[in-house]
Length: 83
Length: 83
Image 1 (cartoon, rainbow over the protein chains, first blue to last red):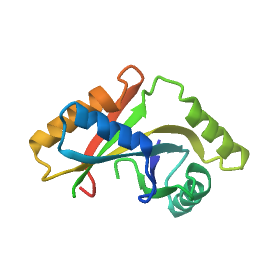
Image 2 (cartoon, rainbow over the protein chains, first blue to last red; image 1 turned 60 degrees about the vertical axis):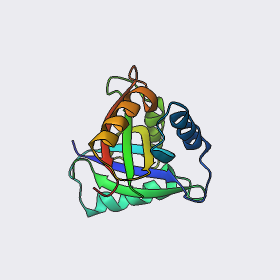
Image 3 (spheres, rainbow over the protein chains, first blue to last red; image 1 turned 90 degrees about the horizontal axis):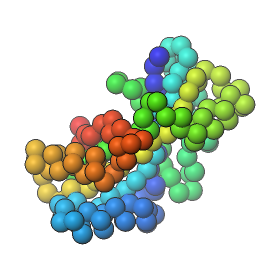
């Protein structure tokens, strides 16, 4: 069955302490080539039936209203798995 | 600066109660075309300098050892942003 992936990331202007903690851990173990880490969410929605424009519009709507908090997060990508 | 994206998802055989809650919420508001939802993590690592095979190997190593818990999660994808 087709799967639609929704990627949600914290807004660029927010601090993302979880990402900062990982970036600090990487520095401490000597991996200095990474200047920053940000951590977001990845949703996989399995669709019953074909993925058409109607389903994609519905996913866009769900992504903005239900899967992300628009005050602190951005929906950065919506795409069909493997597409 | 180049960004490498690491996608981590809960293993298929695990329940993922957070995803189940979202799937239930979708059903309740009448969005019945989605049969399941799974929620994972998306890491964005900003790299200082060019992305070569050495950096990618390091990211693969970090993804398995630091960014995911291999008991309950799988690293499903590692790719350069926009690539």
